[in-house]
Amino acid sequence: MVNREIFIAGGTGYVGQRLIPELLSRGHNVRALTRKGSEGRLPAGCTPVIGNALDKSTFASQVRPGDTYVQLVGVAHPSPSKASQFRSIDLVSARESISAAVEAGAGHFVYVSVAHPAPAMKAYIEVRSEVEDMIRASGLKATIVRPWYVLGPGHRWPYLLIPTYWLMERIPKTRETARRLGLVTIEEMANALLRSIEVPPPGVRTVEVTEIRQLARKL
Image (cartoon, rainbow, N blue to C red; front, side, top):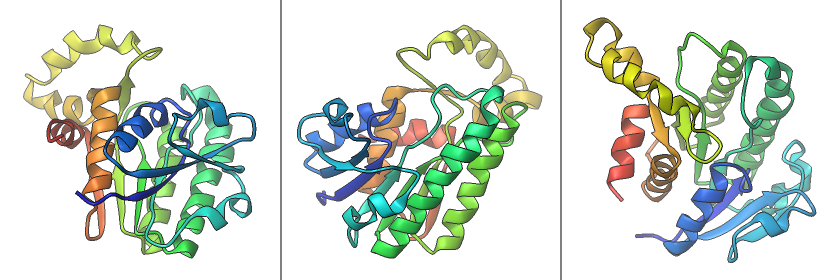
């Protein structure tokens, strides 16, 4: 296994707090973008980079040639009422990250998108799709990971839907939708990202829900 140099934007968030310890435990070097005063939320062994995810001029100099750049910045607990925040935070931070990665000559860009199409969260999906288009146009080697809902602490109510998913997966008409919009755990998500980072693609790879589960089992 190659020990990688990894730059993470959004390292103190829901996914980042689970992913960074796993990366460190496997010998990777991790730098994480964080606001001033939030350094203490990063795990020991992770190097903080003080900056503003919405302004690449505050952090771009810390991105190095060949880095794996992991973009995790996003509005917490997405809902239809946060449509304007998706554009002002999720979209802008991703645009700045992609630009910084391109300028630095990053070796691999990893982006957490969302499963689509879907019957809900139109504004959220539109922004994530725009970012996917930016990534493909950038020329970066990239992995785009598309979960629908990630189960974990503070994100448990969808467990109530598991019987419905079980039934839908057994009906031919709804099987594909149930699998594409399936639920994954935070552990599965972190492990799938870890596997994606350690085995980068030759071009742009899209990882859907079923493959998130498959990648998680390979560790």
